[in-house]
Image (tube, rainbow, N blue to C red; front, side, top):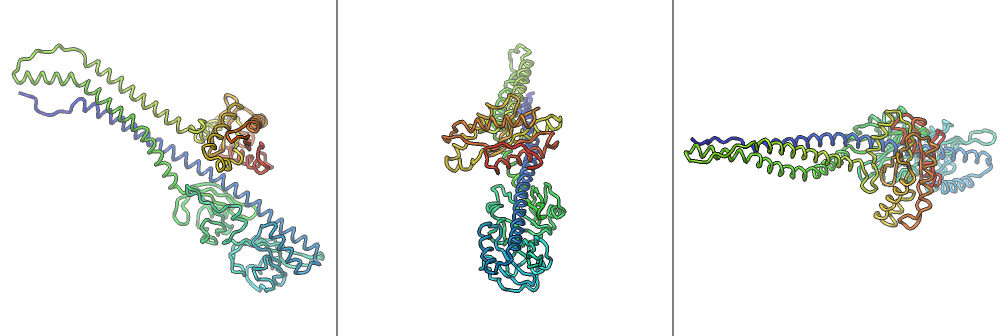
Length: 525
């Protein structure tokens, strides 16, 4: 009797086992990579947003200190020259406003509420009496003030900075006021910028101490009360920080916020979480493309090997079927070939798995290496810093970037800009030691980790790099310069999330002092 019942083929079984194993490994790899990349991107954008909000809050804080000082100096000048006539004060205000550009308008309102002078004169309030309203309350307070947003007599939404004005006999003569028109071009928009929505959806806005929006990409929202937003509530309590939050219109954001000490305002920098997921999906697509080719190749190889392994069993089955049909056949010599075939299959699968591990290592290397400069990237920087901080290993961090790099790209093109980046890496690596680690942090910004040295020693290394670049011809046909900032662990801070911020602050000082210099962080910066 012939064997008619169909059974699972050995080649099919082996192929299914190999394919299932590879698919399971691939799924585990994708899940692990997804979680790791998600955590890395989330932390990176939270830290980046916090750095940006901190820088912006410091800029706004510095601005308002200057504005207060300007009003104070104006009040002092007028006190010392109390013989000035109204028209002379008007001319002085016009000149001061055009030169300083701090305020949209400057005004003098006397103690009885009369607008004695206002620049520009086109505002049209000169000579009017303010008998009530927020402006009159500020005049009556006789105190230095930064107001909340309110509708001024001119009909504009403004923030008013005011300083009392006394004559030489200490008689109150009114208030010197500087107005910022929130819904028009003003000093804030000049500092904060107009293109504040990045391609990834990141943007920042400014809120007052009572939770009202003072600056926002959508001008229609200026003046809106957003105190119900959790992070705005923390700003109102004088707290700075970073977290994932759902804003007042229901969008989940990676938000960082910093308080402006001078005014109690808060600067919020945030990135939509949806952008993180878009980046993750792109990452998974690329990973699948890398895995697909070796997976298909392995599957074809597995089928080939499985068929080779199963062939003796098929031959034996044919012999049995022929015998069962009553045919006379010669009995083949039984050999232990099946053991050898199984051994070959095991070695093949082992080799295939090793090949996938090598590919995984290659993918991991590519994920932690900048393809343009062949230096390590920000992800590996975070891992190294985390390890060194956990071991309390002393090190110094040097953050530096290329001065006027945007001008290089705009003038010579991005290809030449890439060559400049490679040029900087080449000479920087020539100046550092074997154990020093160079990272490309992003764009034209680099980070150098120097283990077991003080910031003073690191300063010498930083200067060697800076001077070397200053004295060598770059791909643009002339030398380029860099600005550097230095922070030391654990001397300056024992926290990983602060060490880069301190170096970045020092870098900012180098930039603000004319670029092409190195600054070591200290508490007086």
